[in-house]
Length: 336
Image 1 (cartoon, rainbow, N blue to C red):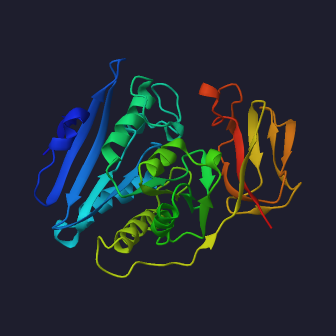
Image 2: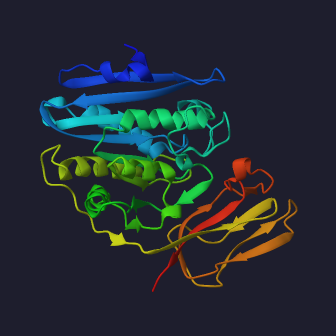
């Protein structure tokens, strides 16, 4: 049976009062005529308790979290659950169906960096405002990401550390069950996506998980997302059992990014997870014939979080000033 479509204004009274699994497609029509559709599953447990949201597909080519979220819908049973679990497997459904990377195909915006509260703005503004309306009653939220086709990404979990100490502590607890090498507490406000800040301001402990690369959803990466969800639910006493506690290291440093100011063909020599020294050679940009246009070096000692593995670099294409098409290497400058 196809899930019911429910306008965002009707969502609050569209859910059943009974425990169980329900699936709805939440809709909202933008002034352009484009329709937002966000699939939402709700699993209401047989015992009262907190509310957690697991969501994925904010960037539509980040598939490992999407498939893990689908598995979560099928595997968590209401009679095993304390509280309520909301699962949004694909946020940017229009981008997903167009196989679009990173930027929304309607207005070319990067939705992770949009703050909710502007439903009269562009399509992406309304999409994020609608998403926030869906999740705003949550106590906890996990947002799954990965590397899309052009990104070779190291798996790690950034944790926004703003607001009350208790809120930050709960956010860190959400991250502790993911089998990744690094957890990165972020204190610097500019390094925290505005959507995450809005969640914190609403009292919602939250993390985002980066696991998977090059748009390929491997079984291992899907399992890291899924097992991390289960551990978070167990940590918050929503599922029984002892939560996994894999070995993790805390990352401390400042984000930086190497971009190209000219278009060309990118030849990286670094890999995700490498630690590079100040001045170390990272790769070169050539013209179509292979003639070197520029060489790039690390400005500081840094960890390579991800690099653009796709050689096509288009410095002219910067919608809304965003540097997705001319990015080369994303770094975390390491503090001694």
